[in-house]
Image (cartoon, rainbow, N blue to C red):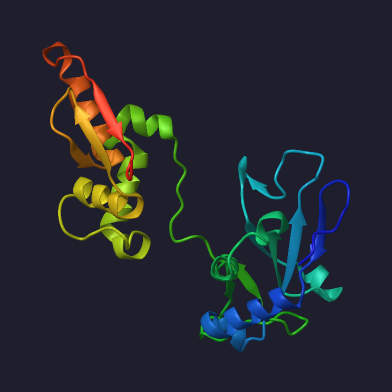
Length: 238
C-alpha cells in the first residue's frame, strides 16, 4: 500500500491484499458472515501531514481500527453491508500477523441478526441485517487512581478479575506457579532480563525492575528506622 501525497486528513479504499485478508478471516472465523455472504468495505484513514492528530481517535486516544454497519440507504447506493476503517499511517508498519489480528478484531464486531426461530434476518435488499457486538471486556483506567487507591481502586480490582477469570487468554506468558507478584516478576525477567543490584553496599544480587521497585517501596514505607538507601545498578552484560 502506497500512501498518497495529499493535504488534510483523507481516506482511500483498501487494496486487493486487504480485501483478500478480510475474505480469508471471514471464511476461517466468522461463519455467520460467511453463510449470509455478508460484505465489508475496508477503508484507510490518513492523518493530516501538517497536523499532529492521528488519523483515528476515540475519547482522546488513538485507535487503529473501527467497525460500523452501513445504513440501508448507503447499501442501496451500492456500498457493502459493513465498513472497517483502519489507520493507514500505522498499517504499513504492522506485521502480517498483527494486521490479521486487528482486522479479525474489527470483524468480530459484526453479528448477523436472527429471528425467534434462529434464522438469519435479511433486509429489503436481501442483504443480511447486521448488529454490533460489544467487546467482551471494556476498561477505562486512570493510572493516578490506581496509584492512590491501589487494591481498592476499580482499576486494580478489574485487573485482578481479568487475571483470575482469563489469565491464559490474555496473560499466557505468566508462569502459573507462585504468587501473583512472583509470577509477574518472573515474566518480566524472562522478557527483559535481570539487573545486578547492590543495596547499601550489601552483596550483589540479581533482580528485575519490579523487584527493585518493591525493595525501594518497602524501605521508604519503613520510615526513619531504615538507613539512607544507596543503590548501585549494573546493566546486564556490563
